Length: 428
Image (tube, rainbow, N blue to C red; front, side, top):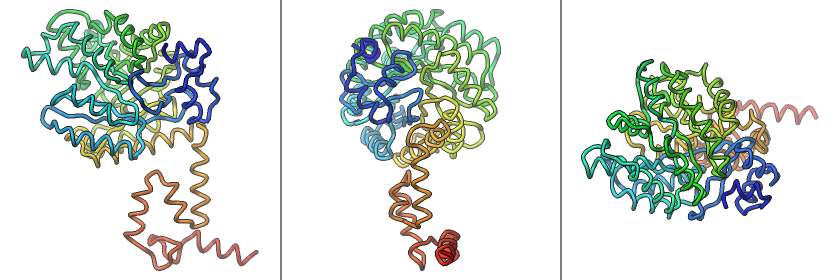
């Protein structure tokens, strides 16, 4: 029985109960969201983790991408990144490995991760076929589905599956033209396969088979945006929206089958189109949880894309996105380091929290209020405790100690708060 089926039957699962408690929401609220398809709890039956809820009315969640590449395949470094993500309080990680022993890497990450783990099955299917047969063009439908089933059996909690990458959508993109065509690896693998084989995407054509596997293990489908824009000039075009329409239809089919699903979103989006993209997804996909990469709001800042994505992410989440995939400063430049991962999670959590204040999520505004009270009281111990990154604040304060221990070296004895607190005490 999946979480959706349990909710429909009026059964309060352990996962539903834990999510309700963590979110400070009634159990009935979580169950209703599961039934409507506006909330998901990504947790594979074979993965022992603390469950997390994603969706309408819940705290905006944050994912950290980790994984090897064909150039750098060092498992120890990826496990260090996993630990960095967990310590920085990411809600999930995705294993995007494309180099090394992919089965072993995935299983080690699943074994060591105390949080939700997602991945992209087409990566392994395509990489292994290219290695064994010389080209991803020789990939078969069974290669794809056997990989999905193997990874589901291993315990993957949610899978990005580019089911909306169809021949029709690809033709729309080709006819219209783009500055940067495709940047999604999964979307590109499937598009290349379709062009060479002149066949429909098996994930779309045989979506019922996808649903059967997902239902058996209660894997949440993350319906991937293979046509997400990789340049702001390509944002919100016909190919992107056509794929989104298809994903909304597939989400409805998944819900009817008792399978949890969420929708992935762009990408690179100019800031004046961010709100519109959130609203379009919520409308076309009937409130399905929205999982976005960034979005990156300008293309000119490689090395600083943790900032460009946090700007877009805060705005997108404030208007409906439920799940933010971090972008590190290494994006567009190199494979990220553990420190990049840690920083990326913190920056994205800031964006998520800013959005939660706007959305009125329980506890969000109260956290800021407690910090403001601590600042007025010049209570540095409490300020550090309340910081989103206490380790950094403590280290920075200790690196520049003031002459008076209740202020900081920015203002010293001319601290506005200290001066006014003293004046008000004297007046009373």
